[in-house]
Amino acid sequence: MELEVKFKTEKYNYYNRAVGVIRQHNKFLIMKVDNSPYYHLPGWHIEIGEDSLSAVKREIKEELDFDCIKANLFCIQENFYEKKGVAHHGVEYYYLIEIEENVETINKEIEENDRGVAKHLSVRWVDLQELKETDLRPKTLKESIINTALDSLVHIIQRD
Image (cartoon, rainbow, N blue to C red; front, top):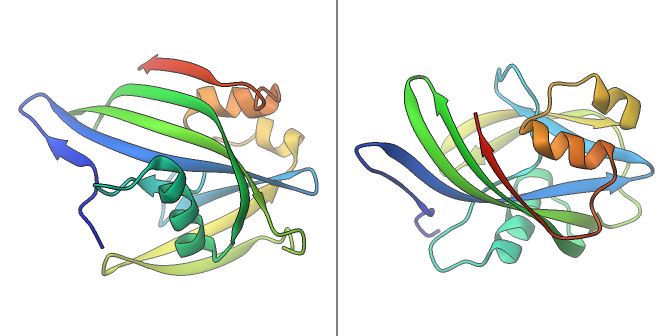
């Protein structure tokens, strides 16, 4: 286990993440960690010396125990936002993930050990209509999924 690409300065917390959009049987996998008020997509920080493609495959295997058959980068997003009074700057790599065909699209609860910290994951599979009504963040990615803009590379700069 390597150190993650994240650090703090006087002004910002900086991080790099690799994230997957998993689509199976016309449903998308979304998840909550612990008691988060919103959903997000699977993935997390990239480790030092690790490329984003390897990171997203590793994270999906660790969190969900899915093997990635194919991963296609479709978005690089730079996020600038404030959370709990702290400014954040993140660069995120979003991949459209193809997993094994026999994975059931059922909702489930998972207990994950993330670097020695126990986390509760609530995993849901939603269709496009359900996704429209769900608080999925970042919202720019939610819009990309809803508008099926997943087949060409885009660069988004998001300032909240």
